[in-house]
Amino acid sequence: MIVKDIPGFDFYQIDEYGNVYKKEMVIKAKNGKKWVSKRKKMKQRLDKYGYKVVSLTKDGESKPYLVHRLVALAFHPIDNSEIMQVNHKDGVKTNNHYKNLEWVTAKENTSHAIKNGLRAITRGEKNGASKLSERDVLKIREMWDLGMKQVKIAELYGISKYTVWKIINKKLWIHI
Image (cartoon, rainbow, N blue to C red; front, side, top):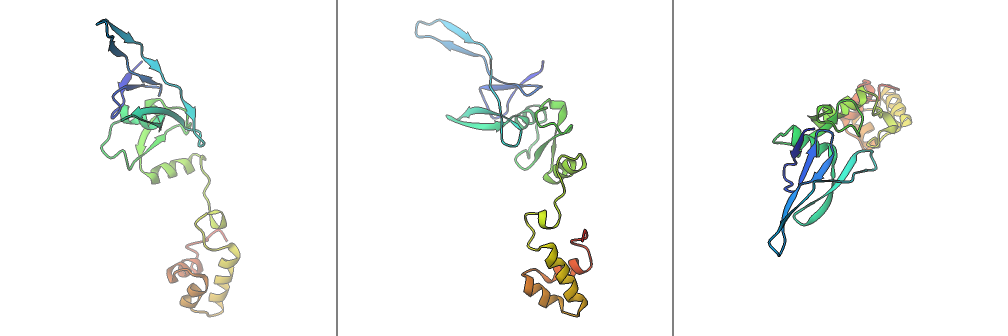
């Protein structure tokens, strides 16, 4: 079993499978005798997204940490970890073996999830960022076909002229 220190956490270690341990500590008693506390495996729980989480204390404050990020920090150190995401290559959120994890950009992580059927593509009204409904899009195309200017359509729907152009040229909302 491979065990490494967790960068940034003086009293914790992590193994290749994502088990987190409090480090062994030598403690000196008042009578001058020393005793060693055994390495203790930390309890983990699942967060609401299905990822394993462990509570660690740093600078006197206990906080939950994602286990897969701790594994990646220990086994795949990189300089810009704060802007990178950790991808589970096999798509199993609880498989935190270091060989199953890799640093990726947010875009790469989303592409991996869609490619492997872990996340659905949200189009049209199902996309939470959409300002328009399918009915609006059909109406926009109809208004264009009837000769209304893109600027006027954009004003009516509170969208940009470029968005109107993309809708009428079927660069957006291509599924309808």
